[in-house]
Length: 460
Ligand SMILES: Cc1ncc(COP(=O)(O)O)c(C=O)c1O
Image 1: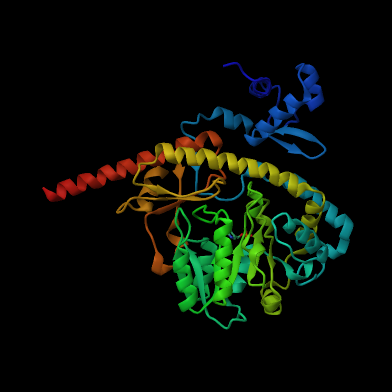
Image 2: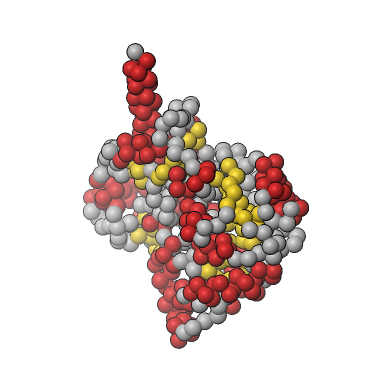
């Protein structure tokens, strides 16, 4: 098969990097210069650079150009045979972190707002940031006003504070999908909250069971990760979201909708539950950790009037307000359109990884291992056939340089499962995804054979 022109350009860059003409971290030729040098169109060079950026071989700096990543030589030298395959870490891909752009925004925030960036500030967050957030939320079908938004120190802070907050419905229990985001399980545990679980599987939750829980269990709020669920990857359909909001309305239950990664949804027709809520029953939270920079500890909550005063009181008691400098920088980052540009790249990256993962699951996993997941691939789970234990497979695969997470800590004690693994592809290079799943499949087969041997032996 003949190579496409842009692939030839990619090979040319790789050749220059391998021969040392282009050093790790150095600037690549401009699009115009390279198109003249290689006698091809600027579009061909743009396509080649975009493809290399998606492969994390190069990165772009606004108004400066494209650069070869620092560890380019390392990536090329190490054979894929023995490279670490990390399905355990779940932060954004380091190569995709826009820290240089953000550094620029921090400097701009200091120049623009001066000592205000270092003084005590508004409890609810900078009003100018909240205005930008309200605009940004419109893209996610969340229509609200700055007065109902609070900047929080990571969305985890909002979730944690909501657990022990009294709610207007006067009810006491919290309902959560099982499994769920481990940070929320910790909040429930440390605050000794009374919680009820509802199982979430490959095809979502049983809505009849949810209705029973809402009807009989004195539920104050239902905590739900409505898109790209952590850990299963499940995203509710619009019909399901509408139904859940209706049930909440019928049985006087609040919903805490954790839309931590809504930005990466490629399907523009997907609405959050917030969009189906006519009466201020859905409390919406959003994180900037998976899509931007987790160390910023920046998130937001959209509060119904009915809980706003109580929420702000506990927020004040927790940390007075969220650090201002990062708020000022985020405001500029959003205003300049940098977030939109960044997110459109991230969306493609995760979508590509998600597709590779689902393909590998269907090709290599033994049929008795159930898997979940979605088009994002950020999170998914593998359910081992009983009596196999997740921890055993984790230990076995560590020897193969493949790392996985045990989902046991993502369950409430009464719902605990020991055969579930969580995988994230956010830090796994595209070309290693299938290899990693093949190794997992081989590990599962080894464990199944071992078990069979033991059973045959014990029946002798
Ligand atoms: C589903 C979910 N919600 C919320 C959070 C917390 O995010 P933040 O870093 O904004 O506190 C996480 C972090 O992993 C998460 O997975």
